[in-house]
Amino acid sequence: MSTRVLICDDSKIARKQLTRVLPADWDIDVDYAEHGEEALNKISASTFDILFLDLNMPVKDGYETLEALQSFESSPAVIVVSGDIQPKAIQRVKEMGAVAFHKKPASAEELRTLLISLGLFSDDAADRNLDQSTTVIEEKTAAEQFTLNECLQEISNIAMGRAASVLADMLNVFVKLPVPRVNILEVSELQMALDYSVKDDSCSAVSQGFVGSGIAFETLLIFSDSSFPDMAKLLSMTEVIDSVVEVELLMDVSSVLVGPFIDAFGKQLNIDFSHSHPALFAQHAKVADLVNIKKAKWKRTLVVEIVYEVENYQISCDLMMLFTEDSVSVLENLLSYLVEED
Image 1 (cartoon, rainbow, N blue to C red):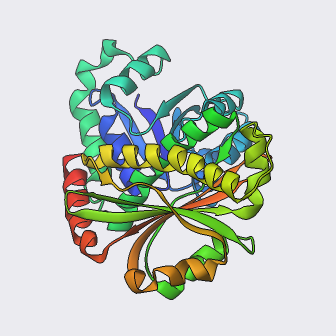
Image 2 (image 1 turned 180 degrees about the vertical axis):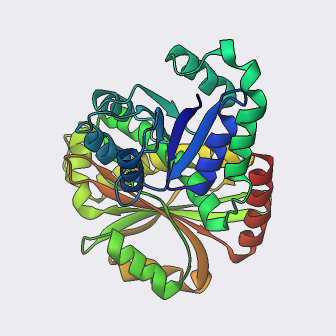
């Protein structure tokens, strides 16, 4: 009898990648869900043996899905597959009933070893299942098509998790992660996006430029000014928080979030980005002022936006990647190639 597998992830590219690294000699029937609510509906209506579950999703995320599954009389074995590799995230999902955690992107060898260790897959019957299982997987993925936004969102999701883990380790906190937003925006729309993310009247920002393989972009780390007291507390800074200390805090947070993010982002694209030194972009400024400073340069830009929040603290910062218009076609070609090779 085939093993029934449900893959729950809001990213089509992540669902395809995970399907491709499942053991090819495994007799399985694969189904998909785009978020936790859809997964729960499918589990309520049918029986599944294994649920591969992402954490950062719209509608109902992985944590909410795990919580809901606790009330089910019978539920599948849950393996969380996520870019959020914070130790506290891994601990939480296991406390909520997940049998294992696997970081994105999963590799075929590592996933096979994990499934065997959990007793969910055995090499003993693998040979006689090869033809049937491969057909099931290919039928489920052959028609998948991916946009630039979808590919960039998933790559950013993985990079986001790496950066959050570094910040969480440094501060001994849990960083709440969103689904990255990817859009091509006019400058007026960019201001609206910032107004939504940065809820304080004033903010400060650090910018840094990156370039590699025909792709150029600028990162903008926008820090809500109300975050400075709690950030100083977590870093055990006892001096008065004046403008000099604020700049120091800004640069510390920027190095922790931007550096690991770009490193993980570049590795997925096989690009080693060169970069300028981080620079103070604005201090105690209005959101509109941030846009106006480089309005001529930004007219229209591809934007990746991630809002980081620290649980139980008033700390929030907005990381934006602003790509040049010339970079968009280069990114599209590169990402389409990577998807085909995936």
